[in-house]
Image 1 (cartoon, rainbow, N blue to C red):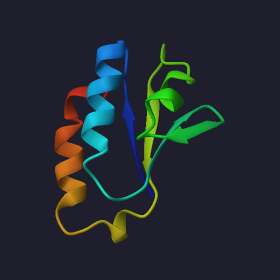
Image 2: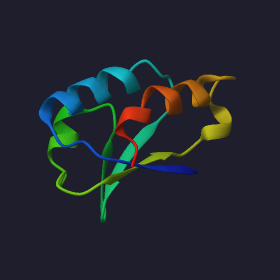
Image 3: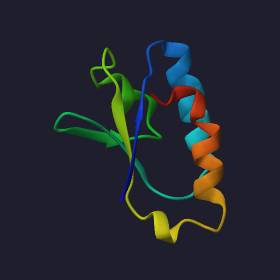
Image 4: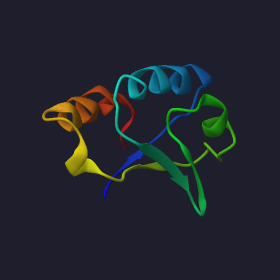
Length: 81
């Protein structure tokens, strides 16, 4: 499992983030404390406490098609902390 800390401060950032991660076919979760939501769900993300960074968890990184994990990490770079 790979984890990346991200910050989604504004609603517009959440919208952009969801649009980016929905391009990828593998499972992505966001964890804030003990709460976990689907990173592709805009409503799920808004249920988290976004005043602090959250962790993006890529559970089956080895099952991701070749090159897609690197492309995802590059696409979400503006949100990483």
